[in-house]
Length: 109
Image (cartoon, rainbow, N blue to C red; front, side):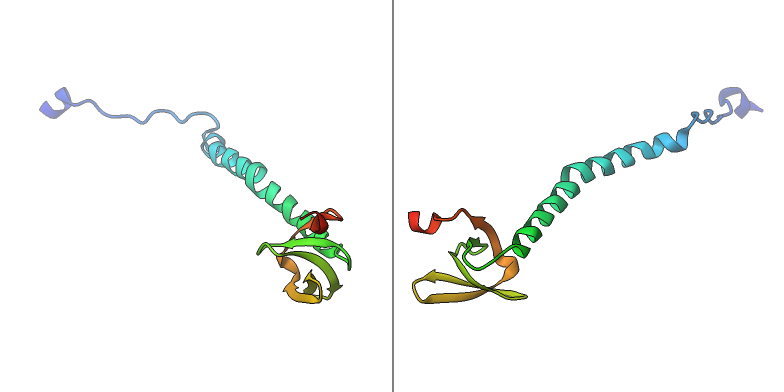
């Protein structure tokens, strides 16, 4: 009896309306931000890189991921032959071709 006099009963607060949706809203917003700021631009860049690699042909001037600059002499399924100097041809994997250079870039270097 004495305990009831000094300590009142605790009651839970009523649930907020729509509490389930509002509790997941920050997670949904974070996922949307990640998608539009990280995932989507990366997918777009990968698509452009793949299109550039598929369009490679003999005579294109390219730069590889390792920094090698040369002219494409032969394109295979998985490898590309690049002439880096007169009578010096190297074979590299297709996915290492980083950029396609404008024609005449090698002569201007």
